[in-house]
Amino acid sequence: MRMRNKKNLIPRMERCAAVQVKDPQAHRGRWADLLPGCGQVRSEIGCGKGAFTAATAQASPDALLVAIEKVPNAMVTAMERVCAEEIPNVRFIDADAAGLADIFAPGEVSVFYINFPDPWPRKKEAKHRLTAPSFLALYWDALALGGRIEYKTDQQWLFDWSLEQFAALGYELQEVTRDLHAGGPVGVMTNYEQRFYEQGTPICRCVAVKTRPEHAPLPEQPRRHAPREDAP
Image (cartoon, rainbow, N blue to C red; front, side, top):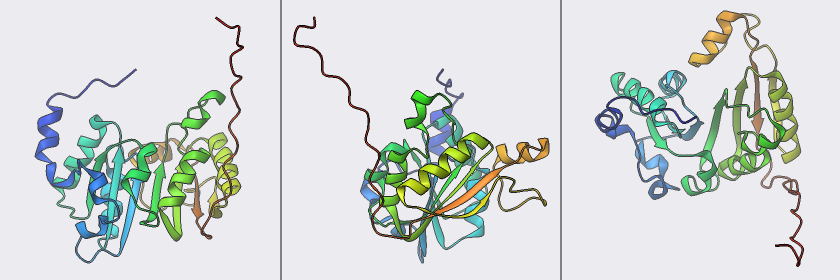
């Protein structure tokens, strides 16, 4: 079910217009121009309400963080947070990650953050997971050589499946853990992550690095049978 729009959503987003990019294709290959002295372009896929977005941007003021979120009701809260805290190195895009090729030029991004994505648990829904091969290929093309994906989830089965997809496409896996906060809080947490930590839910995390120019071939998709000539 689609989330109902929040009250005054459009006026709220308009008040944060300075941090929203409505024509991302126009900045393809030139994102660094939006931040004087920019050393890196990074992107968060699915920023939610922006707690991780804001803290991560503040920790790396010389990096431009492009936050992509397809749910405006969540993104507006993140935008308001960034504006209230006057964080200059974040821009927001209302878009789907499937369109990354139109947003970033090849090799333009240094880091992708993917935090607690929708697991799409049914087998027939696997293609929608943000670590499915088709998405991993999009990240690969946008990443610079040596660039990385930082991935976190509370779903153990999804993490194991994702590790297989990363490896199959050619990413080098580093910092693999199935209980990130076992010895106490580590790094910047999302709102979900803070809640999971307080509940004692283990958090899985890995870093997937692009270490070569080309990724492995994508797995072949099963062919659909052509209709019979005498079919109605």
